[in-house]
Image (cartoon, rainbow, N blue to C red; front, side, top):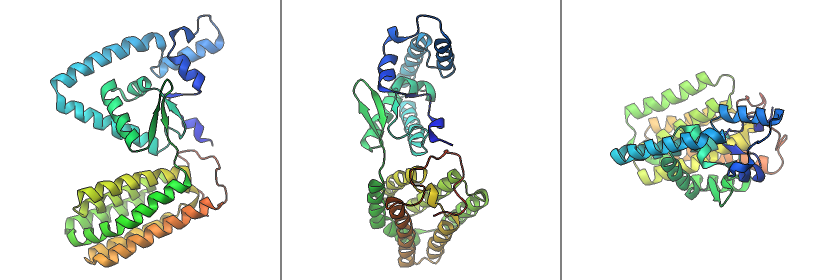
Length: 303
């Protein structure tokens, strides 16, 4: 199955269609089967040019009033927009190279322009998107070379994060790590990539929090999220949940023993293993570049 089937309604299919969507005169003026079909689809996705201006104006007015009356809620809406858009970028709901329309994203998320605009600015600073004048927002691709750079940075930071986590870990922290791993394996019996990614992210996020270093922890999570997209883009064909679970449990064992050096070594071994798999893909692993459906399980015998 092809990943393009999961393209979002917020995307503009070509540069020409993107430009045309901003021009009211580009809408259908004569009845035709294609025109009627496109109009119906637009209405279903909330992108109908005749109704969008009215709904957008009402929503903008309402949100602006709410933001003025509740500034704390405005910040919360911006964070909500940021997390929602970022999740869609990472999981390939928005595809690399895809153009997006800011107004359509507002409709998709049911949020006003201000929080969505601020969220997009933040994501641009992080390198996940780029704003192109007169074209909209484009999703930035991550090459294999970039993923290796992110992993090299993680190899510098995360062993130290694991060491600090072992030093500061409480009994509750260790129990939560155990629950994350046990729950992840139970839910991931079929090798489904989304379940694996959720478990992996939760595990590393918890260790970052346990380190008690907010600066290093936040930086580590940012790097981890960029690497997460590699599972959907490139690494799904090398997915080995059993090996990853074994490595995670080695890290947990060292943390439970309060052995910081052992935790650091286990984390380094885990990341080295991932880096080797990325290099295999870079050097021509089988099926590289093959189409993938976002929800499909990876092959039972990974390369």
